[in-house]
Length: 290
Image (cartoon, rainbow, N blue to C red):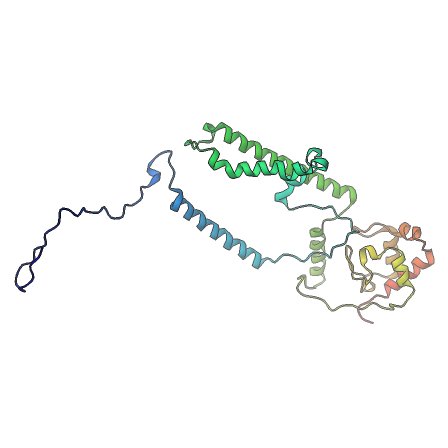
């Protein structure tokens, strides 16, 4: 107790032995001082993981803002395209080609085996609860890890090798390569290469000319579209500014870059040499300024 009635009286506080002294806040121990031990998952480890995740997310957002996704070509079912997923799905893409993962076994291939693999990866912290941290002292977990990595690398390599082989056999050029070549040609001509900048649309010259029907009959619309704007192939509007009639005839007979010769296709469609000649003459008239 204390007496404070008089201002000059000394104040003496007497502690009560029945009240226990508290220990206050206890600082968590530094787990790095204990060999073979780790830090507390909550909150130490989880907080660091969240911070790393935030940094990665911010970096990813910066990349998406600074490098927008390129605008691809319009979809064309008749174009010669070899489907290919992103690189991180190549191993699953190749895996689904095998007979035991497709056809009658497609459910097993798409849900069964991948579900077991990713489910085991998700449950690994709960199934492998040993205190040993060195990989050579954990033979089962380490063997499964190395086996999975070897399978992913092998399947990815097989898928990519098969894809490049098919490109060489069919003479197909990937879309991103076509975009790079077009951008390089535009830079050489001093034209803007951004997809966001649209050039003034070039009109079709002599739209009522009979050659327009010849153009459709020759199956040119499959790649160059009915409006000459192009789908799987470049636009033919303004083609007369780049090629003369004789050059267009040469392209029809011999092909150009990735375009195969179209003369036999046109004749099989019922076109005569006179109609093909008139078609080349009409295409040579397609110029930007008339």
